[in-house]
Image 1 (cartoon, one colour):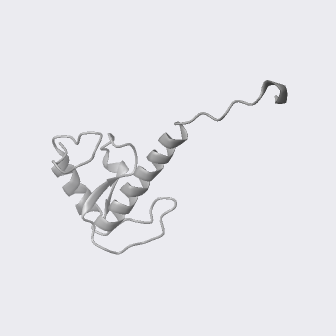
Image 2 (tube, rainbow, N blue to C red):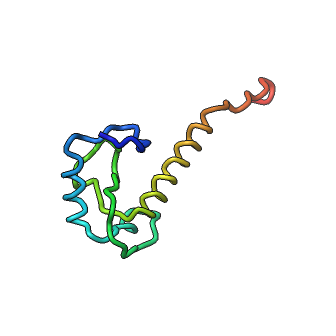
Image 3 (cartoon, rainbow, N blue to C red):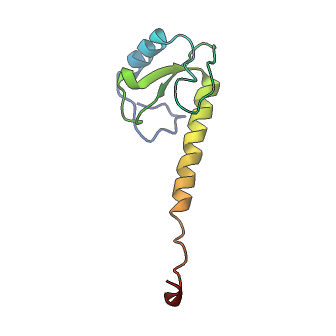
Length: 101
């Protein structure tokens, strides 16, 4: 389950602490720079497990250890992208005049 301060839309599984521990043991150093668009590597200690796939997919192959500042930056970028997507759906483009089609 997500903590009380979490903004997650997908709940974490009951065994999340064990999964997180395994990911941080596998990736002791921040893996920032392993995804397209990320400039890295970071070199700081991993403190958090980051989902590189969907939020509901807790497969260890789709998780990576990452430092807190980079996890915050990635989550913020994902939030901004989702808001931009929703904003783009908000207004329909004006219909062209039938005589100009």
